Image (cartoon, rainbow, N blue to C red; front, top):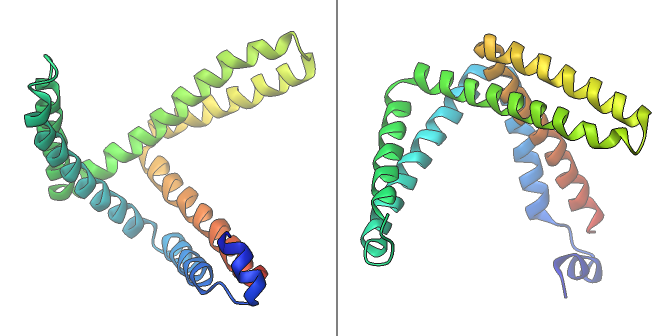
Length: 180
């Protein structure tokens, strides 16, 4: 039996979903109210995760060197991950700028790919093709704007995460009540 069935049979309240939902909504409002601190938290988390990933790569090197002829790549990757992580932890500005540019470049690449894939719609429907092309060109324009304005890119990232947390948190709260 799955958890949903257990909650319905027992008439229970899903406290885990409720608490998670409330925490997500609170975090969302904190990110919206303090976007700079939210970005700082992203940089901190990315720095820590990068260092941990680097340690994992270096630890894996000893296992891979007897199996793969190019195992040195894991060693180099681990060292680079640790250097990036330390750089992020030591320089909030570098970390913030890097995250902002990565976010903007991600939008740019996604927009270019969207434009390329729009062309297959031309054979299916001219209306859908034009709509998709316009939306992807608009997305490309926004991506270029974000690349030239990294502060806007950083704030956009924080606001998108905040919005996602709000939507997902409200959903979790509703699910908790639905499980009764």
